[in-house]
Image (cartoon, rainbow, N blue to C red):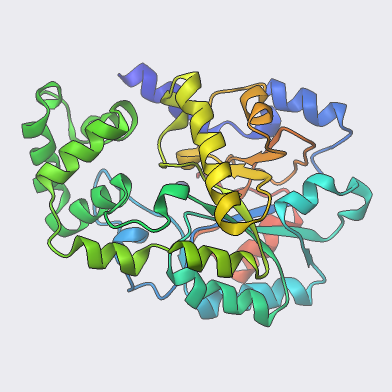
Length: 341
Ligand SMILES: [Zn+2]
């Protein structure tokens, strides 16, 4: 178990530029560490108190959940700062087609997991400043009437407490009996199938007003269609938000192809870009990515320098809710990186 977790941790945290495969591709394309474009990854732009279980709880010892949720006003100030400094905003798909000489003072804003509130908070800010962003949608989060497994998990932990929730998981799965909380948490998320996760979560954490809650937090098809006519690139963040590195090739490919097909059908726009849920992936040579018809896939291996031709991966800079304008400018304009992810 520990070896598996260590391997996954190393894979998730190895900077792209120090990965020999990426290094070869990047060099072959004439891309160096100092010339790439910073891709920033956000999650929600929303008031921090709204639907907190979707991204800001950090009370737990094990499930320190720190996905970025930036207050709208703070996000707008970050955009103003970058515009003031002369940065131009491009989508990931635009970057994949652009000659590298045209990419000075360029930045790309990307957003993973797109909820209903993005229409209320994010899109108006993009429109106000006349900028574009790449939004990575989970296709099974469109028009849902139940919580996606991951959100039911977070809902359970944040409403029941870790202690009660992990005990319930241990009671439900006998193999979890001797494991500590961290192993229970990681094994449940990574190693169980989607059907197993859904089944167990529905049993240990039923939600009374689930349908209303799902309607409030997820987008409808119509919402997605309206958004796709706005200042965004519609991109894929998989079908069901699983640890893709744990899937067999067939299931892996299905996450790539099915989400692309569904999002293209609803938005009536081509989908060129993908981002890996939980930064988990496995086709190191990008062959499945190419087979599925994507130009680019984004990781969250924190690095600022990669661009990328067809079928290539790019790292991104993970923005946190507490990041100041100075921190963001430093990450965008230099090669400075945080000490820890
Ligand atoms: Zn995600």
